[in-house]
Structures are given as structure tokens and as C-alpha cells.
Length: 132
Image 1: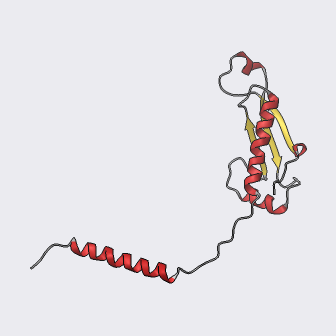
Image 2: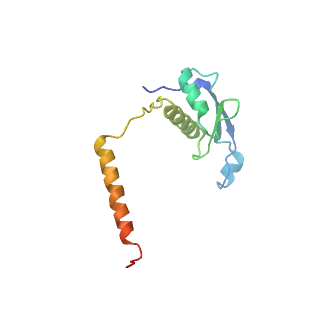
Image 3: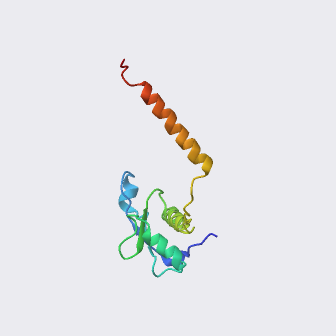
């Protein structure tokens, strides 16, 4: 089940990009800060909890995901990139973790383990100093 994000819930603000780019980078605000409030979103509660529990530096203490996109030279491409990365974060938090059930090793596995221990012990015994 894939949960689609509503772009209306994401707040975009145009900022100046960093790094090389010549005159264009100095006069055009084409980088994007995308802010997504997890608490106020329409995501299911279980997905919200898993998203907030993720130890990610892009999630603030208030539960707001802040992404900066500045790879492309156009504002629209950077918005799409930020939305895609946000969707990837939500997709990663969507599946419920699998509950591990404790199992016992089979009888054959126990036997093979003990045989391997006996064999390695015999090899170590042969490594000892020879005494008469």
C-alpha cells in the first residue's frame, strides 16, 4: 500500500542556492526549502509515529521535516526533487516492522554445532606442544 503525499501540505520557500553557478546563483532564488509538518498532515497515525521515531536529522523536535533541494537550476525541478525525497521518507516509514518470534534451533542444528565444536577442539589439541 503506497501512501501519496498531498503537495498542498508541503510548504515551499525559495532560497538562494549555494556553491558555484556564476552570476545566476547570485541573482536567482532557485533552491527550495520544503517544510512538512508531520503532526498536521493527513498521514495515518501509525506512519506518523514511525516517521517521527526515525532518527533523522532532517526532522525537527517539533515534528517538521525540512528538506533543502538545490541540485537543479530551476525552481520547479527542485520542488519536484524535494517532493520525491519526502515521498521516499514516507515510503520508508509505511511498512510495519515485522515482529520477531523466538524459535528454538532444530535437533539437527544442535547436533551439527556440537560436532563442529568437537572438531575444532580436536584441531586445537593438535596445536599443543608435544610432551613425552
